[in-house]
Amino acid sequence: MAILTLICPVCEKRTLIDDEDECNYCMHCGTRFEEVAVENAVPVEPVVESAMRLSGAIGDESYEPVDYSGRPWYPDVKRIEARLIEGDPEGAAEELATLLDANKESDGEIEKCMHDVVTGWLVDCISEGEAYSGGITDIARLIEEYDDESGPNMLICSLFYALAQTPELIRVPEDAAIVAETLFNLLLDYPEVEPDIRVQLELCTDFMHVSGLLVDQADSMSKDEDEMNDIRDWIYSLQDFVRIFGDATYDACDYLGDDTIDGLVQKWMEEDISTIGANVRDIADAYLDGEIDSDRAVEQVKEYLQMYSS
Image (cartoon, rainbow, N blue to C red; front, side, top):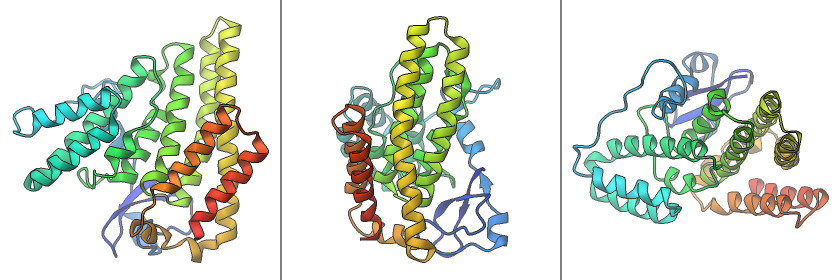
C-alpha cells in the first residue's frame, strides 16, 4: 500500500488516497475519483524526503531549504519557533495567526517556512532523546498550502510517514520507543485537524506494522535485556491502544458504509471538529496510565466514533 496525493477536480483541494483502494473519494467534498484522476496522483514520499532532508535525517545528498532570513517577517517566525521549542504551541499558533493576517501578500511563503520549522522541531525532539508529545495540530490548522503538496492533513501524514520510513533516526535501542511514541502522538493528532475516517484507519494499520519493525530494530541493537523489556513493553502498550482504535474504526467504516462516509469531512470542516480528536487523546492517556482497562477503552472509543455519524 502507498499513500498518494492529488488535486480533486471538483473542489480543487489536495487530498490523500490509497493506491490499493478500488473506491477512492475526495476527503473534502466526497467526489469519487475516476481512473484518469487517480493516474495523475503522485506518491507522498518525495514530499516527505524533501522535508526530512531539512534536518539531515535521510539521504546522502544535502538538501538546502529556502533561505527566508532576509524576509521582514522572519524574526516573527523565529519567535514562533522558540515558543514551540519552549512547549507553548497554543501561543505559537496565536502568533502565527496574527502574522498571517498582517502579511496576506506573503502568507504562502510564511506557511512554507513554518512547514520547514515544524519538521525540524519534530526531528530535533527525537534527536535530543524525547518523543514528540503534541502541539503540531495548533500550527497545522493554520497551514493551508505548502507548494502543491500540503495542508493540515498532509502535514500530519507526511511527518508520520517520514518518520516511519527513516530508520537512520534509530541510533540506540531507546530511540525505537521514542519514534514509536512520536508516531503514536501524530496518529492521535490527525483527527484534530481533518478527521477522515479512511485515512485514520490507514494510519492505525501502518502504525502496527512500523512499530513491530521498531521492536525488531531495537532488539537487534540491545545488549541489555532489562532495557529491551522496557522498550518492548512500552511499544506493545501503544500497539494495544492502536489495535483498539483501529478495530473500532474498521467496524465504524463497515457500519457506516461508503455512502454515509462520503462527504462527512466537508460537513466537519463547516463545524467545530476539535472535540473529536480531543476525546480520543483523553481515552488513550487514561488507558496508558492504567486508569481504564481495555474493555472500558473499547467502549469509550466506540462512543467517540459515534461522533462521525452525528
